[in-house]
Image (cartoon, rainbow, N blue to C red; front, side, top):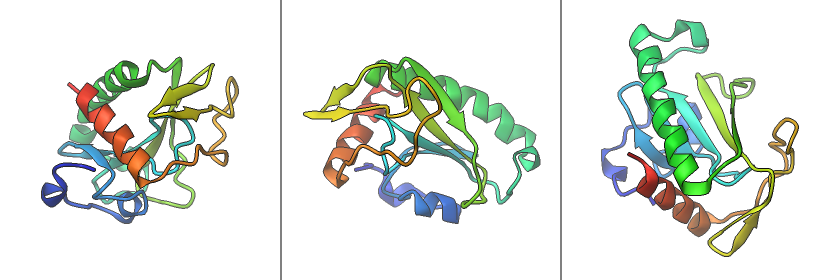
Length: 152
């Protein structure tokens, strides 16, 4: 579980849908990185904007500038944590209108973490978000803690 839950602010309904504040791994001025509770692949995340906008082009310049640094840190943390083969950023916003990305690490082979095998059902094509690895709250907490330890 996130150690700083009392310090975290939930900024929008999309973040709440994806479990905030309990799933927040790292929070920045304009963005939050959350564990995606439905683990389509090991280490699947949500990268959610804090600004109250529903179009990517409506984000502020400072939000865009911060995004560059966040993606560097996020990719480095996931690479260190799970050694992904590729990474996909999906901006779907069909159901949840707040600006956010589904960050999906991709794996050519299944991965084992905490005695559980994780499969990338869509590899090598598009991620299959309907085929999830069935984790529970304890497993998700372990994934979050591991990513946090790998974050610089």
